[in-house]
Length: 233
Ligand SMILES: [Ca+2]
Ligand SMILES: [Ca+2]
Image (tube, rainbow, N blue to C red):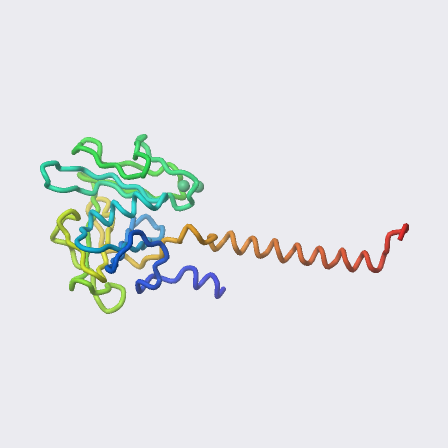
């Protein structure tokens, strides 16, 4: 029970975040909430100099093989609009209907196409995908006060900037919350995106159980061998 509680603890500080990309003296967190009944996840991003919310999206999506995004490039330096976020939660493959090529890094930056930006669905029921322009959209949330933690004393506020224009501050949190039908709210509590170096919790528990059974079987065999020595010894 204790293990399960620890594994499912909500992220409340940067020290809870397991999956980081980038290097530098500044750090920010990104939370994605699909609002589909599955956990929201949180990632971490480090950088030096200037970085935008769009830079953080690109770095995370290109690095974490579980994460997918579909963005529009408005062109002419106007920046990007986020259309879809996908998550291969069980890392056994990800695809959406209608069939979409997200590219080798899962980062699809396309020209603007308003006819193909709604209703995509994850094929694997274990995964998450949300996209929208006309029928729903990804709302963008930032700390009400830059650098404050919405999960520890701070609060989420609706971003007045698009991701390409939003300048990150050290200690910032960015939140993305999918609003199907434009109804919804700020990101909810989030789980840390598991580090891919670590063995996932359920598997390690299963392995521990198997190891325990193995010890028991060996122990019994030893006892049996002692009480019933082979006839030829
Ligand atoms: Ca999957
Ligand atoms: Ca699966």
